[in-house]
Image (spheres, rainbow, N blue to C red):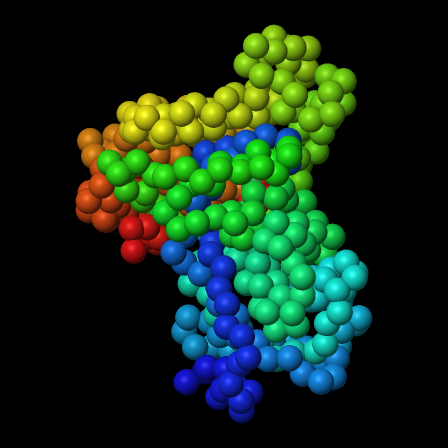
Length: 364
Ligand code: GLA
């Protein structure tokens, strides 16, 4: 009905997609030069696109209920609006500023990555649109450059001071594999998810945002901790250096402790995955969640409740909040084949106790 041909009267030249992500572990480590371990989701953002001969850009988004929204502008006249069109305008603005030649285009965007769920709906949109521009205009953009451009769109146009994890996960991640990324030198390795485990992801129903507020404050606190410690990034410290953070005032000491211990947990998680050690993976999830709750303070009571309900289920190895925080989703490691059942049971109890409407993301 609202397909590209109906909207624009001709078929699209290119159709490409990019996934959202769930982060297994390694939270708020990416802007500290640390380690992360995201997994691409089956939920995708899809962009259909056809170039135009002039410099006009017309983009329509089609919501899941069929509602269509449009943005229209001329290249070089991109302006921040404070809505979804910033991701589109930010992409064309940054691509051109990086020296690539663009013309106008018509595009249609559709997504199955829920917005505000902490599952990188914005990175999926940036990466999908950049892939569409690469194909549509024959741009020489490799996958890592696409991820870097996506992050610049967030930092320089949208005003979200995010790290690079989500864009790399969306651009470089492989389905059903975790992406072990070192954000200091941007090297990575794909790690299979142990067969005993079924990733289970539930959106708490509390909407999350990385723009402004808490996220920027956490980032600024990490920067201040580094300045006081005389280091350039928290990645430089390991568990053996934990005594050094005692000199920091509260809460900077706790912020630093989260990042330092979380980096260690990512390394331990990779090792546990490589030896198919599901119980250790579960324990690391719990420790990570506790650290986010008590030291980094990025959880909210609803998310803590959801994690607690999950972690006491016998068929769950472990659970934790995933993503930027202050709402959003949780990830649980369930026994393979049990994810759906356990999620439905926990969601019912969570809805009763919190009054929120949870959404099942995985298993689909
Ligand atoms: C958001 C940001 C990422 C990362 C996470 C927290 O998803 O986009 O860069 O900082 O929060 O781990």
